[in-house]
Image (cartoon, rainbow, N blue to C red; front, side, top):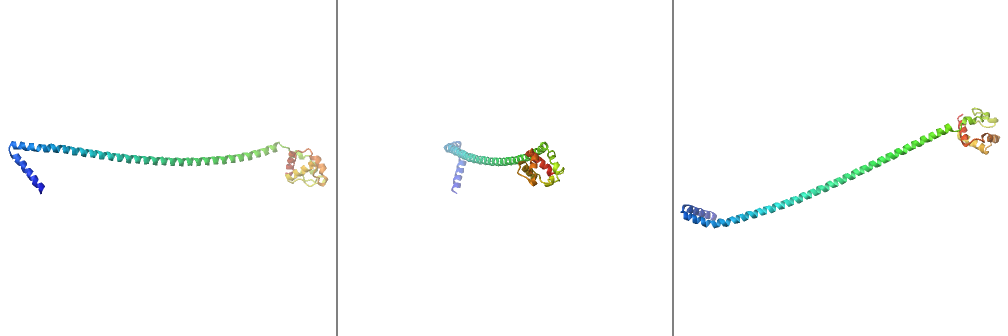
Length: 213
């Protein structure tokens, strides 16, 4: 209510000033000028202060935003580094396992190949020995007169039939006759003379031949 009264008085004054002569109007303007001059700097100062505060607030917002972005980038970088490290470890582990598997497979293959090669070499050696060793049939020729061409004759009617005996038994007996330690049915001296020139390879060869009769 008081504000309305003051406004009414001001409005009435203005009307009176407007309706009065020019001198009175000039006086009114002159009276109002100091008030305007005083209010303008105050308004400018208030505007300047508000602008400064707004600038400072904006600076704070920018600083906080920059800090938040920097922190987020750092966290993202750490996460990427950690993920990359984990992936590298996984790849290294897989590579090691694959390498071990390849080495194991290669080792097994080499062992298998070596065993196969050894077996083949052994067979080849035996074949070569059989092909190039003493001829059992030829060595038996001087035995055939007493034991028969087929080995089924009892020598001088005293010895056992030698055909069908195992090669191992025949080797042992012939070696015994050669050494003079065996004398079956009084045939030791005769047999020793017969096999005296036989080598170990000859004894093996002739025994194998007789066993096959």
